[in-house]
Image 1: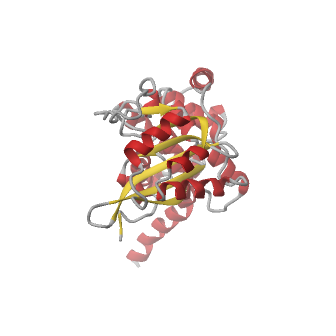
Image 2: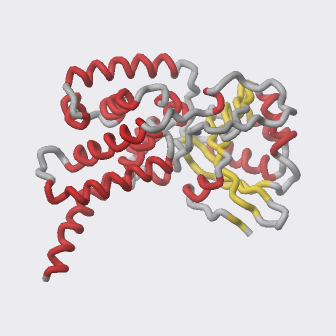
Image 3: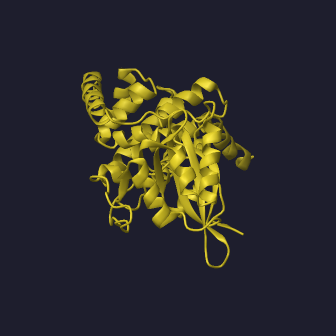
Length: 327
């Protein structure tokens, strides 16, 4: 009797809170710019919520209550860390594609987010479109220029559509303060996002074929094929290297000199990240196995690739559902 009674609150907690896990992960990722940090905060959010569920009085919806816990946990996390960046946010583009890339120590890099972790389970086209638009890699990079409170207000108001009074309750502030912070956040975001590229959704016609051509070109170590796919103003950046390049010819020259190697050196698999095309990459080692290398997120037009952001972090490969080693 006692064990059954104890299980009932847990079952009720799961029933009422679990439907919001995916959107909370997306929210925490927008706040923090890291899939690993976001997963940690969501885990902490659910632990805090579980511990206090018995005292939840229903003065707000369960969804708002969870967002309150998650947002404030994100704000606490941001107090102890600087913003996350991409190489193009650190300095000018490189001019010598034949030189070795420059390593950057102590930099907190932006991380990609697998679409599969946050796509609404209902697969509602409108919900999927909203999730994609608010998770673009360029937008997440721009959000890093806002302080934590500005990020929170902007996301709660403009992405999640919460009324100003509800946001004020989440952040323990006044409605007037929310409106003022939102105005500053919007102005700052407009200022830093003027040059951000707009990616074509991966579901648009021709996008899957474009990705397959990119994967094939890498597997064949074919720089000419990659050059045909790139926009003339294409950008290549490769965290954790601080070096990045702009312009089709410079990008291809770098890839040919330092990356492609011989045919079969790379295995790439199609994926989707941040509402964009992506590729999960494995590199062949001397022991004839392929080991996880990282994930490349592609910003595309209708028929070309305008930016390749190649995250050289093997831990990201497992976040996308792949094993770290392939035979």
